[in-house]
Image 1: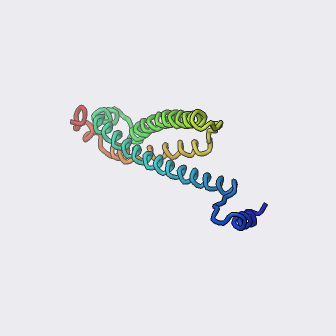
Image 2: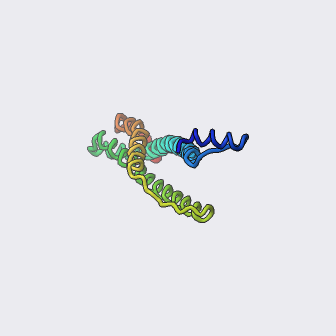
Image 3: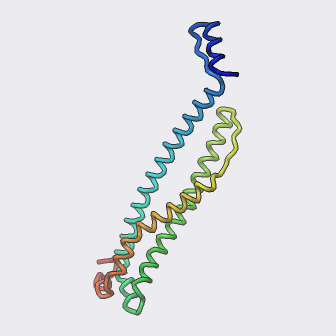
Length: 172
């Protein structure tokens, strides 16, 4: 049935009555849901960027604390590229840990949302795991973490072994 025709018929029969069809109510609910999804996604992206800055700071502190050890590696024949790879490998391990913990937390929160809707509203929903967005988020986390680690790694790789050894233990 054409909604405009129904609205006109109801307005003629009962003036002042506000009418909306089930379709328009569903569209309104979908619009609210998409708005909330965009808001949550924006908050998540901002948190991810903030976490990448924190990872960069942690890696800079780790590199500063291990300057002497990196100097020893370089003094016994290790190449500068190897130091860069070591730092990037550490960053990769941090990113993998973040991916596992973040995914587990997100899936748990989604499952609790499904349970909440079932218990409070009586809505039986299914938990659907969005694989494509998850893989995309994992790639973004890995890339941002490696980019955060790159300046510290390049600094160590470019520093001569003598300067790294002169930094002493724990960067002191």
